[in-house]
Length: 258
Ligand SMILES: CC(C)(O)CC(=O)SCCNC(=O)CCNC(=O)[C@H](O)C(C)(C)COP(=O)(O)OP(=O)(O)OC[C@H]1O[C@@H](n2cnc3c(N)ncnc32)[C@H](O)[C@@H]1OP(=O)(O)O
Image (cartoon, rainbow, N blue to C red):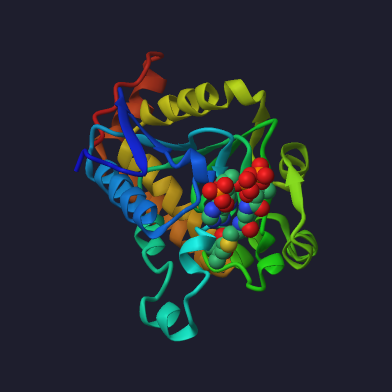
């Protein structure tokens, strides 16, 4: 599918770049955008020529949340019957590493989308928050769970119960964001980080993503056992032989993604 209406998709070498493209609505995540973003990310995930994905927003926001105008008149039965937001499960099933390049607002569903990515790189204009409480609702795309795991209960409660936003510096200090750069450099920084990841072995970066994510879902002992098993599995790949041989032979590795 190439005639996207709410996003743009580019392939640059081994990096897929998805830009949320509803700037007039601060990239609010309506159902169409969710469907397109999930489909594009799944397409890129299925493309073995792509080693990393970057998601960013056009204009002055990453995304200002789920589309309030689309939901305002819904009732409980409509939300439940449509299982509103369940489509995001396909996004979190993407195995290719994903970087969120965030400038401006990442609020509500926008913050939740960033947290579904594997690395968040923030521009110094970024503002993160879960302001749903001010709308008479609570986070619904995983924010209460992922934010609490990312920054701890005390800070998550502060943000979710007050609806206040935090700037990029506070977000980095809290551990939500891996680095902060000037806003006009955030996309370049994300793309070059994605290029670094894309130059490595794709099956191995996928395994690394999977074991880190397991830390969210399992107890420590079973997570460590899972990591050890996946570590053993890396020895079934040609890229393990290549990576370790290259070190021993004092040369750069040439990964085959096999
Ligand atoms: C997924 C869940 C379950 O967790 C729930 C959610 O995500 S609910 C949404 C949470 N997000 C918010 O509550 C933020 C809403 N937006 C704002 O508070 C403000 O827009 C702002 C502070 C981010 C920026 O303010 P400002 O610069 O003054 O711009 P605006 O004039 O307000 O916005 C421009 C334009 O965008 C539309 N817009 C903004 N956010 C949304 C949204 N979440 N849904 C739908 N539309 C949105 C806004 O209405 C404006 O459009 P027009 O009305 O002028 O056509």
